[in-house]
Amino acid sequence: MSRIKNNSLLWFTFLLLAWISFPASAAAESKPGEVDVQDIVFSHIKDAYTWHITEWNGKEISIPLPILLKSEERGWDLFLSSHLHHGNVHHNYYIAEEGDHAGKVVEKNSKGEEVKPLDLSLTKNVCGLLLSCGILLFIVLRTARWYKKHPNEAPGGFTGLMEMVVMFIHEGVVKEGIGKEYKPFSSYLLTVFFFILINNLIGIIPVFPGGANITGNITITAVLAVCTFLAVNLFATKEYWKEIFWPNAPIFLKLPLPIMPFVEFFGVFTKPFALMIRLFANIMAGHTIILALTCLIFITASMGTAINGTMTVVSVLFTVFMNCLELLVACLQAYIFTLLSANYIGLAKVRE
Image 1 (tube, rainbow, N blue to C red):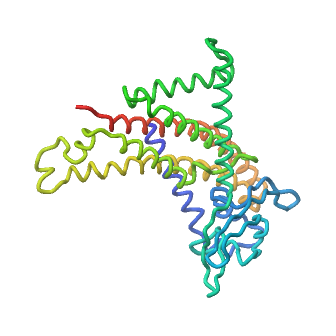
Image 2 (cartoon, rainbow, N blue to C red; image 1 turned 90 degrees about the vertical axis):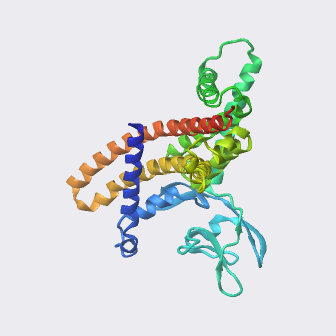
């Protein structure tokens, strides 16, 4: 049932993305005052050089973030992103509005070509990562400090909650998934669980300093998947690799064509790929659906009071429901990523 539910959610998201992305040419020809759903949705999902807070009297209130660039012709350059607002050009740098580098800082070189410099800027997602890492450190250090000050005492409150979660993941996921050789991987898997959980919860919060779409960014999930990939394959046993290149299968599936060895070796890469796509797609799906449902209020504003009022009630109810569902998904996806990582590591520790 959970697989059907996830597949239905993903298909709905892809159809929704197709709906808001298909009228790209129509969006360019939209009348003044019309709501550009595509721009609203993707502007909140993608990374940015500013951290949007709110709008007041038609003016955007945001925090400009530092931009650090290295150009082949100019060398290093550091300035605030406020210099590039509203299509401004600063030191020959500007934010591309279209093309392969849309939304990124580019420059015109001496030949008049648009090129992308080395970009080490502090973007919204980077700030969100720093915030989540700070929260994670605070939680871990606060819990450890309590145990140091209160040895042999039963914790309560926040510390008791943390002990319950840690023991649940440690005993029910790490030890059960890996087996006897779980100790070298327990710290990594616990860190991954809390890192994903905190970032998922921060992404649900609609107001500053929340809203950063960190685990909905495929580069973040790719790094997490690579870490699990390394943990699985660098510490795998000889028996594991033997089963990869010479699996227990009929000989005609291994010679003269290595069908089963190819399938097994291909599975080495599909497992982390599935981890990456599952986390990315589920988190991005929730954010996209919530934003699209919110936009229904403004899309129907010109259709009359009755239609707009009805759709406003429907939009609010569905948005509240999706936020509650996102809260469940935030915890569930952190658990699933940790569980599958532990199982993959356990499969690589196979013994004769």
